[in-house]
Length: 148
Image: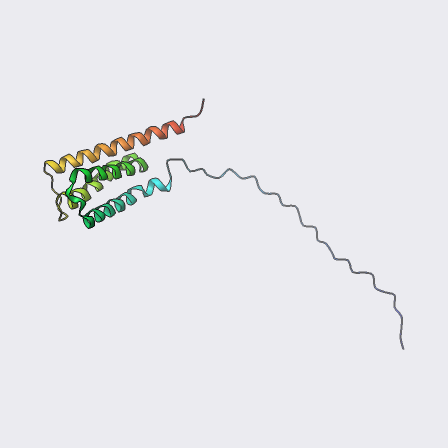
């Protein structure tokens, strides 16, 4: 026996009303001051690696005979590192450059001495680092000064 039923109503999907979520008002992201960058933190180790690579290249090519030209190369390397590093670490950059220069260029057997050429080269590298740190400090103060 067959019974006839009324057709079922069409299925309508049940929509759930979710509450509207608004993003919370947040504070702006913490801005890192321009003098606190990774480049400034890595400048000294990268400078030491650069000095080691420079000494290696000079020893492989036999270019350690021209000590004044090599000192100029080390002064340029020290200047580049002093421009990028923190001003307080500029003398350390000069000291690291001097140790590589004195130990491998002047004395050839990784010996450090403190005779007249050694003191002169240390003084030149320290002055180069001071000039680099001073120039970098001037550039930073000019950049921080608000435009009038």
